[in-house]
Image 1: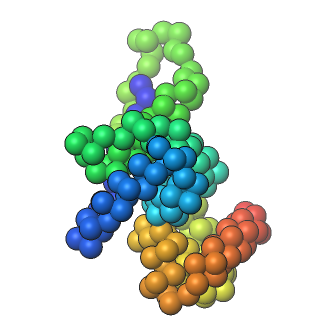
Image 2 (image 1 turned 135 degrees about the vertical axis):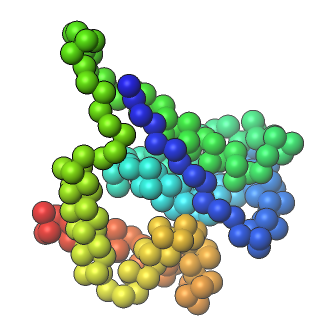
Amino acid sequence: MLKVLRMEEPTEDPGQKTDQAQFEALISAVAVQRDKSAFETLFVRFGPRIKGMMLGSGASQDLAEDLMQEVMLTVWRKAALYAPERGTVSTWIFTIARNARIDRLRRQPVQPYVDVETVSIASDAPSAEAEMITGQRGELVREALQRLPKEQRDVIELAFNQYMPQSEIARKLDLPIGTVKSRTRLAYKKLKENLEDLR
């Protein structure tokens, strides 16, 4: 039986609640005017948080990136379907993200069993081998992160540990948004190289 991991939407802090009117205005601009600038603002705000959520659910880096792109494309295409009376913009977007992850899991091929009586039910607890592999992967990622220059590591840790969008990272580190984007791109490239070296 396919086991779907439960994904939690990152918790909003009280200050982020004031952004709701702004997000509604941005969604409206995308829906009515196909405003690319408004969409870019939403992408910068929610993209890293969606990717972090996917990674937290067990998706690989490539799958998390792919799902994040898919979710944001859905936001672009279906912005007109957003209804404020049904919830906040962030709730709507993260619902799309959860559904995208579940749909992707359901599309994965499942090996059929010939004789159901021979099937043993596996424990919900992770096996020692699975725990070892997970631990090894985590160690590789931590080691790859430590190899990054400090300024790149700071940006990545804020984006994925604290689910901060690039605009907030720029404010927190007192950097231009272009510098944050550049460091993020360089960090991704370096992380990929580091992980390949460590394997």
